[in-house]
Every structure is written in structure tokens, then in C-alpha cells.
Length: 74
Image 1 (tube, helix red, strand yellow):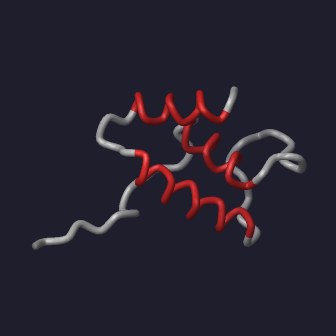
Image 2: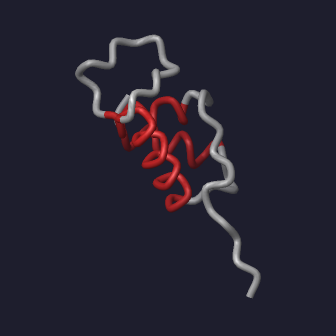
């Protein structure tokens, strides 16, 4: 599945999520993967970028996206 399709899938299935929150979640998970975390997908990830892998994990519902954005009380 193309990255654009994965992004659309995540945003369509999670109406309370916006692109900014998704980007923050992908960045955080990508950092974890780059620092040695094991992928939750059962695929060979040697040729897959960590950002793409992170987005795939989120699209499959293997990673919960919560608490990445702090709300400000102004």
C-alpha cells in the first residue's frame, strides 16, 4: 500500500486525529525504531525506511496514538 493510502486510512479511521498529530506519532515511533526497537509487523524490514514502517504499524492499529500533543489551557 502506498504511503498516501496509509495516511488516508489512518486519518479516515481516526476522525479525532489530524495530520500534525499523525506526523508527531510517526516521528516518535520512527525514532524508537532507529534506536533499536523491534517492529510489531511480521515483515522483513531491512529495505523499509523507519518512517514508512512506523506509519504501517499505526495504520494496522499496532501502535496507539495518544498523548503526543499536550493541550494548552489559555
